[in-house]
Image (tube, rainbow, N blue to C red; front, side, top):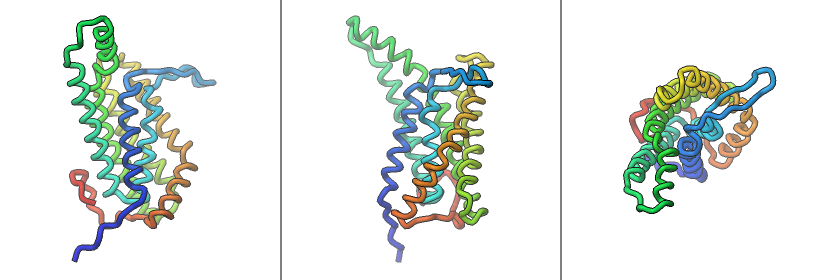
Length: 236
C-alpha cells in the first residue's frame, strides 16, 4: 500500500510568499539601475530588483533545509510558471490598441516604458532563476548531508554564493546586453552578486529563527539521502 502523503501546515504559505516575491523582483524596478554612495567604496550601481530577489533565495534555503529538495523543486516550477504567465500577459496587454483619448494614449506610452522590455527581462530571469535556484537547492541539500545537519549558516551562505554566481552571470547579460553599456552591465552584475550574497549573511539570524520554527511546527527536518535530483519532474 502507498504511504499517505505527509501534510504540512505552512508549506503552501511559503510557496505563495516565494512566488509573490519573485514576481515583484521582476516587475517592480527590475530594469532600473540605481546607485548609492558608500564610505570608502564610493558610488555603487545596482539593479533595483535586488531589494526583492534575495528574499526568494532565503525562501529557497528554508524550503530545502526543512522540506527537502523535492518540495523546493515544486516551488521553483511554480515560480517558473508565474514568470512565464506574466511575460505572456505583458505582451498581450501592450499589444491591445488603446482607446484614442489623451489619457489612454499617454498611459500606453508609460506602459511600454515600464513593461516594454518585460519579455526579455522575463527570459533572462527565467533562465537565471531556474538555473540558479536549482544550483542553490542542490548545493544546500548535499552540504546538509556532508555536515550531518550542523552549521546551517555555512550551508545557506555557501549555497547562495553558488546559486547567485550562476544567477547574476546569466540574468544581466540576457536581459540588458545592448541596452546598458558593457561597463555598466559588468559593474551592476558584480554589485548585484555581492549585495545578494551579503544579504544572505545579514539575514542568517532570521533564517535560523524561521527554520527552527518550521521544523518544530511541521515536525520535519528532511535529508535528501535518496533524492532524485533531476530538475525535470514535479514529483517529490
